[in-house]
Image (cartoon, rainbow, N blue to C red):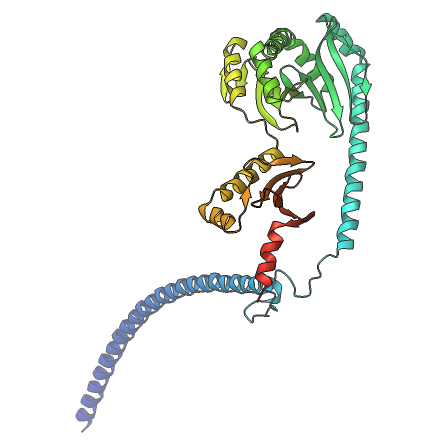
Length: 405
């Protein structure tokens, strides 16, 4: 009995050890499996987070598009004089304008415009005063005078006006440069070569350097341009040119217009409209005419003569009246119009007569008496009908016919 019990106890211990070992093995397997599952789950979570972030970004962009759309809709409704709406998808923080925004009145606009102009005027006065002081300081600077004397240059006196203050730099009596300050407050050197700004911190040094370095070039170019200017006079005095100008009733400008590019000599009609222009370029002293460049006056003269022959020197009013006459005379020649005249025993004088501010086409009956006249008013170009000493605007007749039932 004792041996049997002992054997059974030994078997239980063996089974217990076996179960314990199996349990440990199973626990290890479970831990490994869980670890793998957790790692995979982490990857999934990371992918989901990445996806969610993209979705959030997309939704954010989509929401912004919706907000912009709502704002555009409100702008369209305002343009159509419809009340705007407070869309639920537009946050108060993102509203561009409130519905209660008050438009500035004409009085407010006028006051702000006045004060703005006053401010600009005061600033211009301040800038001009500072520029004038700089001009006077440069002109009296002994160091500047000394350096320029070494280059055989001298300073002219300061000349001040309402818009600018300036002085000239001379070689003998020949003015090569003009140093000028205006209401913008900056100082510039102007010469036949164009304009050059002076720096604020090295004004005198810049002045000395520029005028001395470019002295010979300025003298040479100035002499060359003066020669070219005198050649312009020979073009103007050409006998054929003078004849055409007289026939066309046009004129050359007495003085050329001058700018950074050069000198511009224009031909104008009686009302001052520019018909053609010859330009003299600063940079290379060449002539420019109708987008072509010429080196000599002889080359450009023949081109000017050809152009003068072709120009229409009529004023704007003369062109308008000519167009009105052509329109009226064209209608007179129309077959249907001629038939209507003949039915009533009328004829239109082919040549109009002129009175003060009028061109009149008389319409006569079979006896040769004037029944009425078609009129072109010269000052306005209006068509009128003169009948029984009363002028009627032609188009009011048309309006009257439209009112009839």
